[in-house]
Image (cartoon, rainbow, N blue to C red; front, side):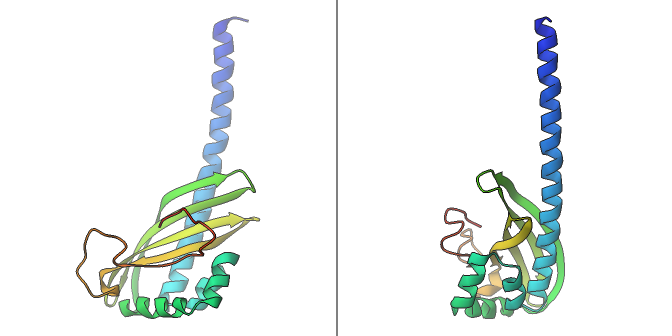
Length: 170
């Protein structure tokens, strides 16, 4: 067997492995996107804390149940009014961490409300075969009443567990 045949074998094996991972990523992205969209609509349609808690990771749910700030955050989000139209989410990032077989992803969507437009970022985590919300953020000028500027933190309200996703920013 010559060098050419050896290279051909490597290319074929690489193609098979690459195809497997590509299909897996497409499947995970489709699952995560569907979960993200259904979750966002359930939460923002009535600004439901319960809808978020029901879909939250254990870490986020614990903090939502313990913190008064989640109620204040939802009260601020309610300033946007009722949901008029949700335009769906797009993946911002999706990756798999092999230790513990945890898959995470961040999705971004735009929603129109009675009193303004907001971008919604939702951080997801898949553990033990189920997608859960690890982070939930709503960005909109109307949340704080000031003019929009280039600092995304000015108009952002974020619910995220302190311990989980410590280095991730939404």
